[in-house]
Length: 176
Image (tube, rainbow, N blue to C red; front, side, top):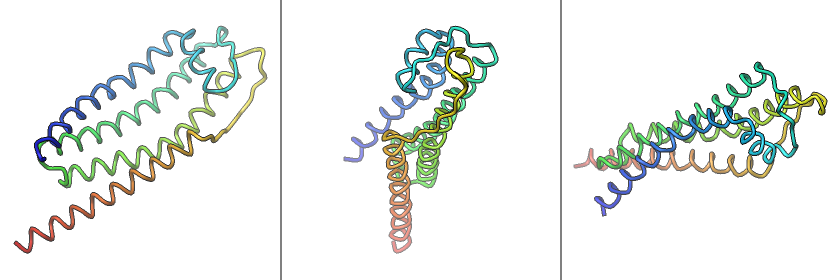
């Protein structure tokens, strides 16, 4: 059983590595191809923006808003990858593993609020860049944010369970 968990953990560490590379690369690519980006973003923002007149400062601001969220997610996924690497090396309840999973859980929870701020910043930047739409500010919280909040809280709970398991493991080792 142990070797199966270690194998799965090693595979997951590699999958997470692909995700770590993909997040910033996709952020950069979408801002380089504005037609693709407009199509992707307009669906999510719920409004069609004409971004053909977007100024360079607007593009730079949007790029950094996008890169900030991607960077924070990368930090979280690096922590998760470290957790999988520890489990792959036969130490699923090591202090390093638990601390990294807890870091991932906190970042997952923080991403709910960062996502809301990113969404708001995008609408502000895009409406300032579109001459047909007056400047607007829209702060929205939808079912995807509620779901992400639930998942973030679930991850925090799981990290607490891991910490309790580690304490129980240390207690058992002290009796022997």
